[in-house]
Length: 312
Image (cartoon, rainbow, N blue to C red; front, side, top):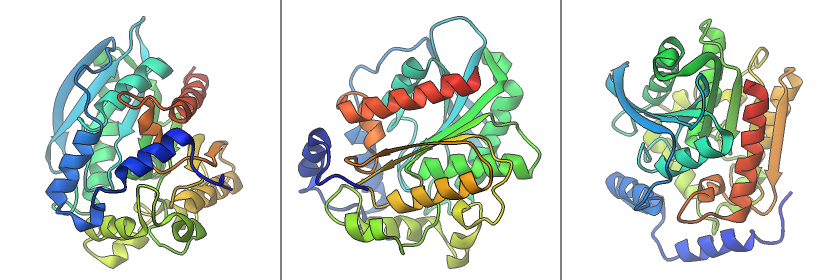
């Protein structure tokens, strides 16, 4: 299920990160600053247009960044929820990735600056993600997009939010989600997985980091059992939109990703599962500058093909 060692480019990234303190050893504000700095670029990749919007969210103002491709309207549109353990990340940390996503998949992307823990614990991020998706479904034509071609996507914590928004949309009677893209999502919030023991040290994100992120996200332990936090625990996954799920061999979250694929398939959901046995956690974001890693660009192209096919 994994190679003997990560892809050479990913291994070099891991080795360069070895001297940095672990996330769980740092104050929250420093984790946020590092997350933004690692992926910052001086000259972002151009796209057709970028529109910053503020909407009324469940907790007040909610910021969105709308990326439009070049080409003829209307565009299919994908909601994007960033990773960062529900604690870090935002519009800037994933700006370059969203641009690369737009140009690779030729779809509009709406990035959501959802509220972060520990200041805003579960379910704040979930409710923001769902509210933003509702707003886009109702207002997509305003910026040249087709609300009937609406997908959700996210990496890591954002993959969790994408899965949960797809579930919420089903449970609440809309909006209609045509597709979901889940990049190495945490879907269980427990640590009884072989992959966490195998990969819990030395591969960018650690077992202790995962536990620390959950401590920030959940104000009450029982919340980690909520199906809108841990979709793998749901007994009812029927009727969800088709999905692409990405996993990596050296990712502590690998096994729960496999388990979620199996559960979706058992529920009759069409799933494309891309497993890269030589990949680490967060590797897809390394497709964009300043990294432009080969393995990361490969999976981004796979995701783009799935989205184009589904949304056409």
